[in-house]
Image 1: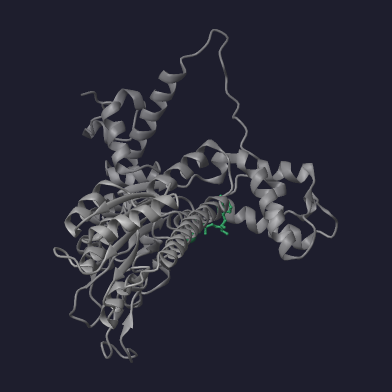
Image 2: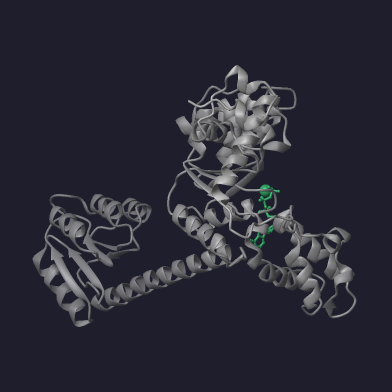
Length: 475
Ligand SMILES: Nc1ncnc2c1ncn2[C@@H]1O[C@H](COP(=O)(O)OP(=O)(O)OP(=O)(O)O)[C@@H](O)[C@H]1O
Ligand SMILES: [Mg+2]
């Protein structure tokens, strides 16, 4: 049952409205002044408020404003004996649905019709919002293909962060779908109706990037012929996607940090601080932790942007997703070529599943696009695949010697790990940063292993001679 609040200081009017509306099947509360009405609105959810304009305590228009602030969903019909243009304008401005005149012959029937109309409209709008929301959600996560547990975890993260305004950092190799994920976050967020603005930070020189992001004032440099808004301002209320953030210069990093801290920007050549309200999603295929250690990426900016990290898994780590992706792209590119969806030979699929996809989903997508273009039959045969995929040999296990009586695997691996670390340190004369590079790990991981294996860098350790294990110095 829909709930209506009637506010009028005149008792006969209150009683009349209550009676009429109750008879029409609504649940009705009444208030004899604005203060009581506000109290009621704070405690109850009303679909509609019908309020007099002229009342002794709070004026009806003020009440309208206050009610809308507390409960924007509540529709409002104002009633007045003296309709001036000014009252009408203000009622409309503050969100009233209708303004009815109560003169001598107050028309109860008309009121009933208006109430029904307003409530119907509200209902439709709600339904519409729900549908739109649903559509958006379907649109966004449905674009991302993959049912592997790794991807399920990604979807869950996307859904969780979509509801927040926190800054998100999406990491992952090239072609893993970072931009797709960023768009999904935006589309599923309350900001979906506002713009999603994307910029590839790696594609601009520093000065260009600055004027793209922050805009500029006329005359601030040659070519600045008029004031121009930057992307942060263009993304107002929405999301800005800073792609390849790892490619930015140190001084640009300082400027970005400033925006994230102050939540305001200054145009190039401008003095005014312009507040910006936009959600920042950043992405990179570089190892930012390592760049922080090397000093090429600012620590403080890293912590600001990585409030919530999402890692897009490489395709080779989720081979089970390959058949789904293949079918998805077959459909897409067959449709683009206005052909019936091509089938795929089992053998072709086998090649695709055995390959390691260094270019991830993008490489798979390009492969299918090309195969669809080349295939003249209704089924994609292996010959349509590029050489590198047909020739690819998955790494097989090396010839290992497993003794009859068994073998202590962990101790062996641990010793091996230790020996490699010491070799690397010897080769670099004890330089941990370079040793970590040789071993393809972060300095932090290397230090952790030095601790774990109790390796101390002594002069004798670093001398690259003799049996390895003997030269190791213990703590
Ligand atoms: N899970 C997926 N499902 C469907 N399409 C995908 C998926 N992941 C990526 N793609 C598609 O692969 C292409 C590359 O994706 P995207 O641009 O999002 O990758 P990226 O991680 O941003 O790559 P880069 O680091 O090279 O910019 C796009 O065409 C995208 O639509
Ligand atoms: Mg990208």
